[in-house]
Length: 264
Image 1: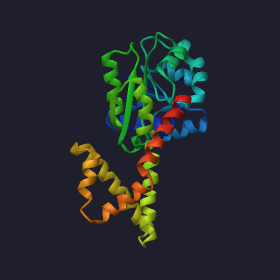
Image 2 (image 1 turned 135 degrees about the vertical axis):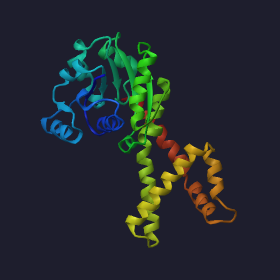
Image 3 (image 1 turned 45 degrees about the vertical axis):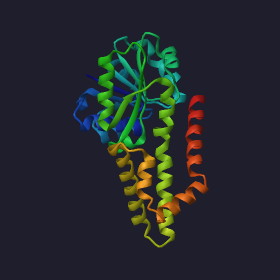
Image 4 (image 1 turned 90 degrees about the horizontal axis):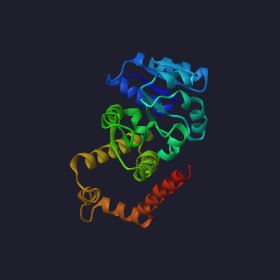
């Protein structure tokens, strides 16, 4: 199996790193292309794979072709490579906001295409990816893509309407979590804790909390109640967050991201 990546920024590099770390594909069977010679050189040195500025050679070589360009460059990329793609190849889109109908118009209605939405924690092997295939992709090919994507975290098949939500609840939300960690640390620093130590304590607390949600199967509200002792310190903090509208603000942020995604 040969993999191709058109566009090789942070997300594509994270995907490739996960695949290599799990030993799913050999380095010599992964090909990538970037916009400049300097970035191609950096990718080659960092990942040990073949990387050039030639999109067409990558497209011709790959059994599974990952489209990792920015949304505004997707149409031009399609014009460049679509006449050289075969109906046996599987196209894996990592392009935000571009729906299956649009991708089929650009690359051909006879092409096997999966839309995916990974997130940046893929860079540390803790990503979560939504996957939506068109009707031409076989069960075996879907499973193969899931295996590749699970090399750097979790991955599951979702419907296309849900995929736009995935892009916000898991794709954009790491930025919200980073902001929360920064705010937690700032509060600690304001009371005298060294900043480096504050970041470590805040980040580990968030990591552990997320793991409890995933591993216990308990509702987040139930886990919250376990921390809030009667007349204790935590319930006082929760009261402030509710007064300041934290819950509503987060909901509005997610919905704003979804609205923006639909306009891409």
